[in-house]
Length: 477
Image 1 (tube, rainbow, N blue to C red):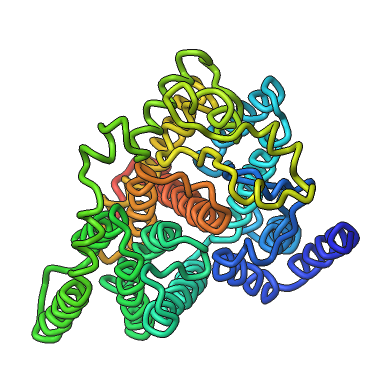
Image 2: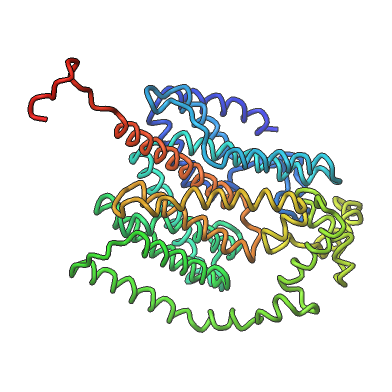
């Protein structure tokens, strides 16, 4: 009730502040990036169903969305000159198509409530995407983005170190409540920091990003995520190869040697626990053994759902439908949600706490296929392809170009979250989704600036040289 009263005044205040002051817009964007990782700690859930084991459990309104809305309107109203001009951010059309298709899915499926939860989050992510796209216009805003991202990564990594060495947690979670969530966040957020650290704009910024990147490596290692560790290694190495200069002096050689030694020392220190994690189950046991509740069951469930429902069972309805129908078909004795609803709120708390409910598919493609069907998976695949094609052209720019550094860093962020989404659903977790869409908005702005620069160069090269009116050759020609 308090939130319902405060949301509208806070939104109006955010719009007024962002429209009036450039400093306010900078503060809002810095807060949006750095606090996105804490967005679930600063939200309210309307119509919440906390017992539901889905990707979203209520219509979430977070502080991040309020300041993103204020920033979006403030960029339209408060700016002057060329920066005020509107443009169509890259991939927005496909994002809106995906949103509309998801809305139709919610309208045509039962139950509708769980789908409405997830639909509200997609709408919030669009607001965040547009706010980032229209705010980030120059190197100044790129720097604010990098510093805010570095602060968030350092915070999560230091918290992970504290959890492991002081609290005694085997697998650090940071503020994200699960080690795999922290792993995906670091795979997403670290590549831009690595890009700037290896080919940045100032010594202080490069040192800051280098320190944050090393902390991210430590935090990632302490999650002991079987998918996250190789994905992080791949995107970090790829970013370094794409951005670092190959003209090495004594200082560069010494610095990179120290990085290699530091990483080797971290891996050696955690090798025992890493080995135990990877020995918990083989790939064959995880994906092919039908007697084990491993990640392979989600692939088989998604295929079974797709056979019966070409258009899926409805957005965010995976847990509901699998628990009732498709899990028991494969021999998993999940509890029926209708029985759970009947005891929810009653005195039988033990039955509620011990209920066995299907988790979301630990594969983003399988989850999308099961919930949105073949057309939904096709649209979602096109969206990922569009994001990749937005980032790939930046590899062709000169290596020291700041725009290239940002574009390539975000490109490897996309690769990082895609890689771990092969074994996780947590792309949809609010802190990760918002951070991802902020980076996508920045990438859309970079792509627009790149197109504008190419058009200006093309027009400048096409301007004809004026000849003297009398047809004579100009002197000195």
